[in-house]
Image (tube, rainbow, N blue to C red; front, side, top):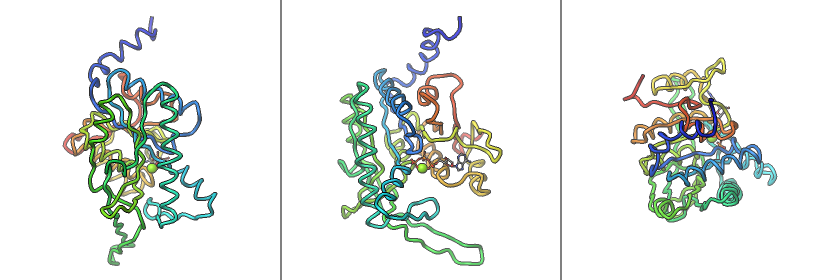
Length: 296
Ligand SMILES: Nc1ncnc2c1ncn2[C@@H]1O[C@H](COP(=O)(O)OP(=O)(O)OP(=O)(O)O)[C@@H](O)[C@H]1O
Ligand SMILES: [Mg+2]
């Protein structure tokens, strides 16, 4: 008989053996945090990984949650090349929402289901050092490129992963909000895909899994592209088939692969137990990214 509990567990066995003792970095997109049931299922997936000896590290986003808080406070947001212009008032809200509400929601759900999650922002133990991001914009070839000031939008300058090792080794699950700290103690708003990729690289993770609200990278006719190499991805960004929030995901996935992360996937968090399906089944789901050297 097919698909008995035993069959399913046995299909997972080689993967469990392979990943045991390894680190898996999961970016939990704000857009994937849609309903209570899915959030609980995601929490259980993370606990299951930890229970079988894998070290999950979660980096979360929070775009929709930030939008809601800004709206409630009457602050309007503008976007430059997919980045939220972050003035001081916006930065305060971003830090409150990501480091407070969203982070503690992810942490407490995992703990409620029996895990031991600990929330961090990039400020804790100097985890994420950041610097101001510079955005270049060129209207067209005839005009010189202009430098756009995005406010307190940051790039990761360094990751100090000691605190992650300390927590993971002691049985805790680190849950990281994408807020970085500058050399003068200033606060930076960083895209969570960027943070997840840099943390995965610093930890030499086995997997980087970017959990979002679509099946993966979709082509113009909305079909799923199940494997995507660097050249194809660059072309899709150039001709705008990949846009908005998918751009940092693809770029960060590729840079993590180039920095030694073994595999990077983009998956749909609206599918129940998406993380387990990606890691522990032969077929997998979503889009797998391939760096240049592994072009296929
Ligand atoms: N080619 C593409 N295939 C799939 N999605 C795409 C593509 N191009 C653009 N997108 C957009 O990218 C979005 C995913 O990125 P988005 O930043 O919105 O979500 P997230 O990163 O999961 O959440 P958050 O930013 O809150 O952490 C999709 O919902 C889709 O609208
Ligand atoms: Mg995003």
